[in-house]
Length: 442
Image (cartoon, rainbow, N blue to C red; front, side, top):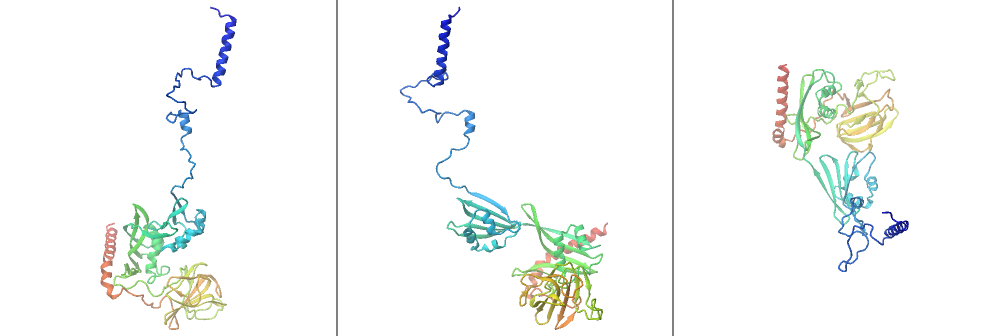
C-alpha cells in the first residue's frame, strides 16, 4: 500500500524529534532497558554503582590504587653502592641525601673508625625508613661485615661479623728451569702466592742472584670458598725450597697470643733480624769492594756498600726494626736515611728520589716498612740504592755478614709448636714422596 506524502512527512518529523530527545537525555538511549524506578528503590546519583563491574577497558584504566589525600609514609628502602677511587663517607652520604649528623653518630660507635678508612671495591648497604637511616652495612670483603643499627634516638650500635669459609688444601711442586715466576705460572701457582713464598725464604735465599736451574719448591696452601664459590687464597701452611741442593723448610705457626710467623721444623724463626736486600732490584751494579776504582773519580776508593740497580721509584724497605738517626740530604749522598738498630747495628740508604711519608729523624720503623724510593740524587750515575751495613761501627758486606736470628719459638711453647705443625710437615713430606714416585714411574 502506498503511504500518502503527508504521512511520510509526519513520520520523518516524529523520528527527528525522538532522536533529539534521546540526545538530550530525556528518554533512554537503549529502549530495550525496561528497568524502572519504584518507591522502594530510591534514585542513585549518576555514575556506576560501587558493586557494578566496570567494562574491561575501564578496568584497565583504573588498575592503579586510588590516591589517598593523607600524606604517604616512605616504605622501607634499601640501597647498595660500591666505593670508588677518591670516595669518602662524607661524599657518599651527601650523594645519598644523608646528613653529616648521621655520619658523625656512626663514627662514635665501637667500630666507627673503619668508616674513615674505606677503600675502592668495598660494599656499602643503606637501609632507611621514613627518610631516616635505620642500618648501614660496610663490607670490605666477602668474609667481613660491619653492621651499624639505629637505636631510634639518633644513635647507633655496631657489630663486626666474620663468615667462616670452607678451606681446601692445595699442593704445588715446581722445578725451576728459567725463573721462579715462570715455573710457578706453569704449575698453576698464582703470582701473589709466589711472592709470599719468596718472602718466607728471603733471609736465606737471594731470588735474584742465588736461583739455579734444577732448584725446586714444594708448597702446601689453602684455597677459600664461600657457598661453593672461590673467594681467594688462604695461608701457605708449609713450604720447602731446595736451592743449589740445600733444602730450606718452613711451617706456619700461630702462638698462644695469636701472632703468626714461619719457623723451621725445630722452631727457629725463618726471619732474620735484617733483610739481605732492602729493595727489589734487577741487578747489583757495584758490589762491596774495599779496593774498587771509583766510576767518577777514576781512583781506588773503598766501596763500603752494595749498589742495587732498580727502576726509579722502586720502594726501599727498612732492613730491620730501628730508629731513624738521620733523614736528610747532602751533595754527595743526595737524599739519604740512616737507621740505628739497637747498640750494634746501623744501616744506611743513599741516593733516594724522595722519602716515604712520615719518614723523619727520630721516627721508629719496622722491618719491611717503606722508607723511601729509588732515585739518582747526589753523586750517582743512574737510579740505584747504595746500601751499607755496619756492625759496631765497622762496614760489613751486607750479602755475606752473618745476620742475627729473630726470636725462635719460646721454650715453653715448643711442645705445642711440634703438635700443631706436625700434620703440615707430614703432608708436605707425603706430597713430596708422591711427586718423586710419579716422576720415577715416567
